Image 1 (cartoon, helix red, strand yellow):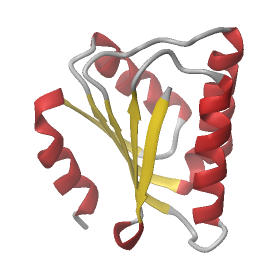
Image 2 (image 1 turned 180 degrees about the horizontal axis):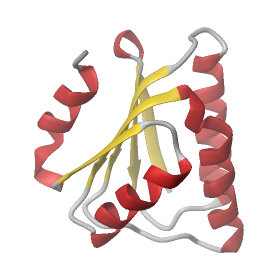
Image 3 (image 1 turned 30 degrees about the horizontal axis):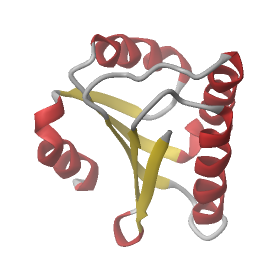
Image 4 (image 1 turned 30 degrees about the vertical axis):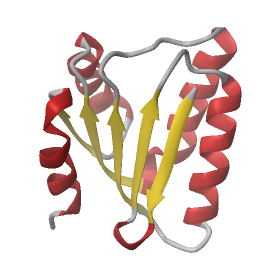
Length: 121
């Protein structure tokens, strides 16, 4: 399950994975992001905030995640991975090869620092 919201005035999407990620989670997230992008050229920042990476519910969840990244990465300027999971460092390294956004990893407790970076010019 993914909780998500958009901070409208700042163009920041906040994503908080709560439990194993499903294809339905990414369908809902895509609907929200696509509606925002229909009225805005880009997303200033994507903040992913999770103590640990919850994994995927199924192979369909994994493929939906990959599809979401593929469909949206060129519209996202910055990504802040705010997690204590070892997946955070690995995801940052992998992202350099697959996304056009600038990506930074922050410890879970440094949510304010991550948000400050996303909001900065």
